[in-house]
Length: 99
Image (tube, rainbow, N blue to C red; front, top):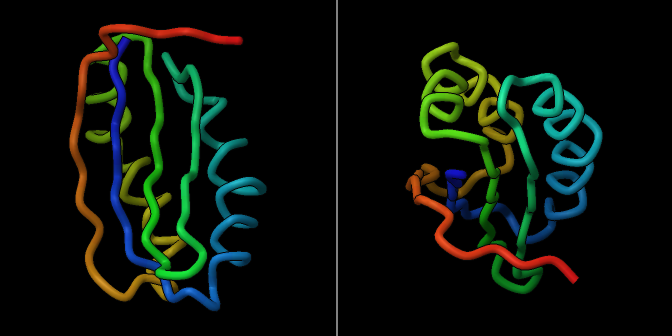
């Protein structure tokens, strides 16, 4: 499994709007993507710093998601809320646990 971590800086007063976009638009669209496993949005409400973590069955699924334009389309939904350009990193998931 592989994960994409996107770090963002959002206007603190727009956190609720970002949460709604992620929950109501990004997640349902991602669930239709090949190899999608999970998505998380982590935010610091005081500073507006946040990160999105998505998990994919394989590196190929993650890369196909990006090359199709899907990733960029989802980021564009948040563009008016950003105070700085997002950064993206990819990782191999080496340990996983669920409660």
